[in-house]
Length: 129
Length: 182
Image (cartoon, rainbow over the protein chains, first blue to last red):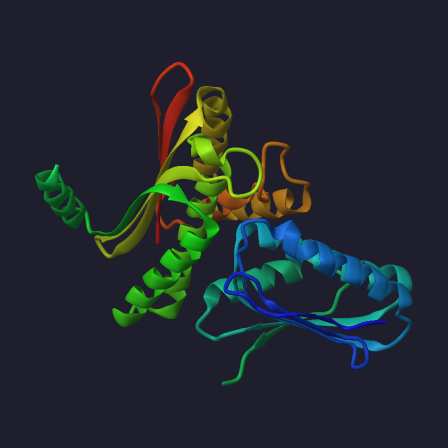
């Protein structure tokens, strides 16, 4: 299966989903005018990726310093999809939510995602300089 | 006309308004203005956390205009490249940053929006959090082009209760204005 690589823009994060290392990285800010234009290819890739997974260790690193309200729903959907993989297929997926120490908004958003995900390992990680 | 511009500037200054825009707004413009506002606040040694919160309010309010303003540039109607008009204001007063937006809406949308906003202003921060999470799990409202979470998020972030106003313009349109503070 192909990797998914998308360059960052001023209002969308970079995507680097590596199928050999099983590390998925999203990094940047996310506040496009139309989130589904951005998220559709990501979700369709993710669906295929989850289908072919067995018991590999998968790490998902998100470093999203700012996102708008429509991205908030998209991120929850993204996490719920991963959680589905854990619950229904026994996938071994861990999410790391990385944030700057002085970015209390990103920290709070991370905490609230964590509260909403019962079965997906979700770590809040302060970024090291 | 020229004297009025100076009058406008002094009016803005007395209210601590350091950014004011009126006209067609696009995502590209939003990004450029947003970056300039962040640079300005950064140079003034505003904390990174506050800068992001002001920026977040600015983005939500600007995208509200982009999605919902009923004042559409006639030549650009339909499909991509559609431009909608609105007013955006950012200021600093009594130790707080504030963001104000204003745009036309159709009279038929007033009561729905008003009820929604009254409901939000009556909620505590904890209630808003629960409501936000509930709504985030639901599919967006049929009228919504974003996530329908924008106003809830703004209500959660604002340190003072949301302020809003509806003014009837004519048989078809009303003017909606809205203020949040950080």
